Amino acid sequence: MPSSWNVFKANSVRRERALDILMPVMAVAVALMLWSAAVKVFEIPEYLLPAPLDVVVRLGEEWRRLADECLYTLQSVLLGFSASVLIGVPLAFWVVCSRSIERMLMPFLVMSQTIPKVAIAPILVVWLGFGILPKIAVVFLISFFPIIVSTIVGLKGVENDMIDLVRSMGAKTPKIMLKVRGPAALPQMFGGFKIAICFSVVGAIVGEFVGSDKGVGFLLLTSAGDLDGSLIWAALFVLIAMGVILFSIVSKLERLLIPWHVSVRIESTTAYQS
Image (cartoon, rainbow, N blue to C red):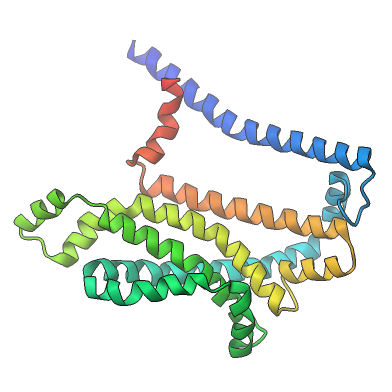
């Protein structure tokens, strides 16, 4: 009986993993077919909306150029996102440790998010020049807030009874933060990371729109000026692929680091509950 159950469980896991791949692929295929049919039936001009096949052909023709521009944009995304994690997470721990720090910092953090990044990007270009630094700064400003807020929420989400218990055992605040609050906050932290990594791609493009001579954002601007619809959509496909891959990497790290959390475990148990 146990062996039969293990076989059933293994088959269910394989089926769920296959569906995780097949269903998105099928959904994308259907969307592309509808797109192609709409372009053909309504005779939409190429500069407004090219057919999917034209975009694929253009991807093949311009893959070297697209790869170069993508690498430049990816550099901005990764550097800005990494900076937001390295600064945002420790700052969140500091805020939770001190109510006074929270009272002083949170208004500035909230105000920083009310300023449109498109409006502040030109100022960053004036301050930091036309290199990669303004793009990194915009990515940081966009991705910083969801990381610090999700981390603060996770750190504060620990039950008071648990804190009182470890304090009664002689644990001090630094140890409580690292041993109790930190691990408990990981699910919320990864939720913020996944939001931030998607926003980071948007931030990099915003920075390149304002002032850049390279990157996918710059390619989108020049292609729009030339009314080159197929190249515009080829660049958009590259951005979509970048965002999906980066999101998948963060999700994979989440599964590796917190396999004990219900949000991760449910992926392998849903199959047996349906």
